[in-house]
View 1 (cartoon, one colour):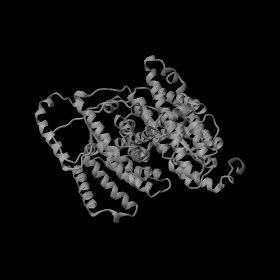
View 2: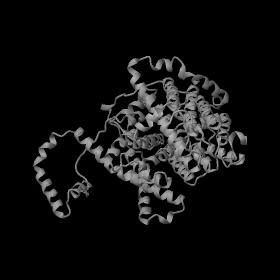
View 3: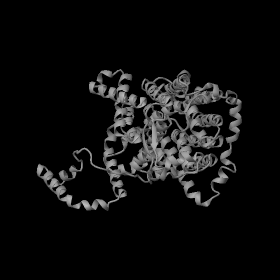
View 4: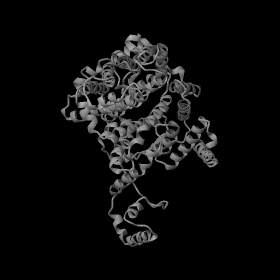
Length: 586
């Protein structure tokens, strides 16, 4: 074993590697519950997806262990499974069999890309800011799904503008997602399921910030128990006879190989008119997978010495399987291909592998332990019937926030960088589509009525740059605005669609402060997310500020830094909470 895994050469022992494997497993085992819940919405049997998840995970992780000899684990990627369900199936209208065929082709194409110079061309062709934005955008997308699954949002829809924009498994859901006239808002917290989800969000944040081993899995368990106690989950209505390993194997038979069947690969290209759209979806799968993998491997392997500068440069500038990173990328693509055949979305390298690396894992023995533990987990399939959606929603939110760490590397105060980054990332969440985010297309509707608080404009910097240094500059501006009063008839001509682009550009300009937030520090990122991104989700500045302030105090309590919270924040938090309680009781 020492000779095969080169334990002494890497300064590690069997005991250390086993403990590291256990650590990684507990850090990422939540995917066993999240992935089936996500993919089963397309009509796939949850029990079958559970086993397919294990097959894809074990296949990819064994490649990491036995071929690349590195301590990384793989599993169906968060974000990619959401893209599979909400974009490819719901919004674009493909069947789950066709979606699996796309994942299979993504795996094959990515293998070719990894082995040839194409990888180098792609990596150098896409700007760094867009690579960061893709990762951050998927984080926003995931968090948005989590917020919706938690039941925190309600939508006011004008029946006159109700249109079906998708042909997916759930047409009503596709229509609601695609309808631009649906205005979001925060719910009134009078639904037990929503309160359970809120409990899940807080307990998940607590476990993650306290760095509790297996904290995310524990939060799923705790939220599920609370859901049972308050009646959100009714155990008497669950048919446990149909939720066992035997039934799971039967369900696996319904999806295993479906990607290559007549309803999968053969049907995918049956209509020539769909080919451009199919290719775009496969491209989105592939780009996300490649950049996610390279980012995870470099960011977690650099400090631990698993990869050196030569490995990193080779990944960007060479072809073939020359280094450990080349082998890692190849292993990922093989895992994706096998996973697609088994019946799951893209398999990718998990950033949670960093937990095992931090515990001392340095070789493939760590990955081998993870693979073995996932294989044993196949006997836990009956638990899927118990775990409710509201127990999974907090995980999507927290993982989404974690993925926002790349946003700080974007030059938000440079519009030439910020505009494409916005459409690649933030717009991805707004359109509920990874494809649209990457393609940077879509429509935003804005409306202006009345006037609001007067404030100092950052555009004053243009006059300062032109030499303005005194109040005379401001006096000239005031005079020009006064003269503009004669132009009021023009208001009747200017349509809303002419104003909308201004709202978008000004909004992008205001994102410049995002780069100053420590997104890779969850104690900073959690309050920042609820103050900023959640503000957009709820269509309310007040609710965003309220949620952010409450989370700020909560995080400080967890970290034992409650004394640092200013008394005014405590007073405001009390008022915000009382307001939410009054809404729930109304």
